[in-house]
Length: 362
Image (cartoon, rainbow, N blue to C red):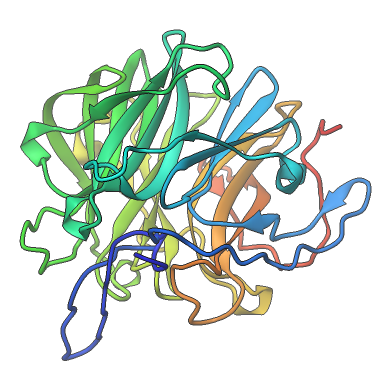
């Protein structure tokens, strides 16, 4: 971390082939990134161009015409609000939570995501005490109508006793009346085997899990094992006809081959049953050298203001071998659906290319 990974994980010395991996740092987060401003292309009245801003691990939540945006900051949680995602860079960021120095959640604050449940706001985030192996998932709660005001109360860790080990990238999705928590976990308590898997548990309330955790997916294919085996950054896309797709990031984020994979829930399937999810054998979104998109991953989804378009937002590097540090930048683009109802993300759009803004933007 410390200027590596999403600023994720402390000091990792990756040595491939017959060499060994010393200390882990995980896919892309660093403790205290030094901001490097990307070159933001000029925009026209009805267009914008990628990248839209500097950063990593983007997350978007929409409510009442407002987009709430978060990304990895390393030492605190910062919230941006806007009514036009193409103008995100002009939004004024506000620090909404800074953990107590020396606490178990005070360092390597990664991948925050915000949700609104039962009349309250919740932020799920990753943090530890500075040692990579200490990374865990945590929850904050705010009862204010406006999440940029009020008090964010620390609700502590959210975890399953059956899988109480290194955990990052927590997210929530609601399906058929139930609420589920998804996260990335590394079960090896010795920090020797760095393989990262994705787990799921049902939620009793917004900060408590019930039952035994299920491992939904683990690195199986070569494209999921560049650097070392990684399945992380789960994000669920729910369609209007109640189909569920779990999109995740695969391979070590320090490689150019960090990419998105996908699981599709069978019709009538149970989200807690691994065999009810069908795994894509190939990445669904990956690097495009000619488009200056290296290591695209850790995504989120949102709708255009008028609700007519679907958009994906993600981070990537603009050049090869830039790793998972502060050179990553944020990009977004529209996507469609295939005849079978599954999402078609296409390929990362070239940097500098003028793109029509989300429909309904003012």
